[in-house]
Length: 248
Image 1: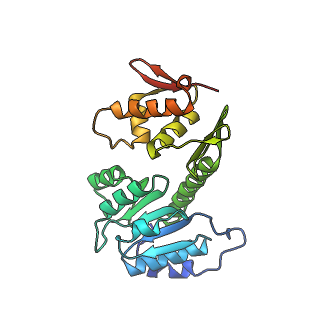
Image 2: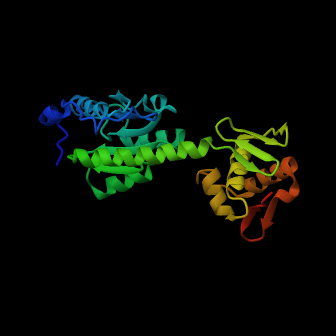
Image 3: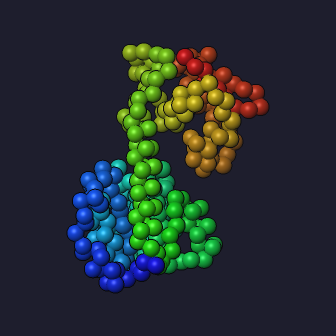
């Protein structure tokens, strides 16, 4: 097992990586939020030795600010001195739906694991841990983050309708559409799932992040707004089910 007191593995972490293990620095970096200096410094040293661009915070308050678009993974301790790690996790997930969050903590109770995952974490690893397992999980999460980024960067096209998700802009032919934030999110979901029936519940979960507790009439209002901008025939109402965006 890998001990969280990195002083015991410092000799390993100081080795010069062999050519086979040297990797180009990832485009998507890692943010380590850990207050224990020994754990954090050792972890940063190991990750840096494996080619990752790493930032480190000792408190949770600045995590959302530092987890910018260059960060693909946040390694988060729960026992932080200023803000509870679960609250930091919730704030991170609310701010960025695309970043991977790996909780690294000594809390090994099953309820703690469930609470961490429910707060928005993608993974939960208990200290002490095996270094090889941590690195494997990091690689896995960053691969997924890169795949999500490539998917988000890809332009979307359906007939004369085109969308740029990174710029959050849409055009019908040569005319740019004036869309409200949720209208854009809804249109992107429709175009991505063109020809597929989407239930009202699924749409609300994906576009409103499951946080909408009121009536789903707001969905109908946004669909009506889209129809006036892209054409009434583009979105079909499925009675008792939801909607389907028609292939152009």
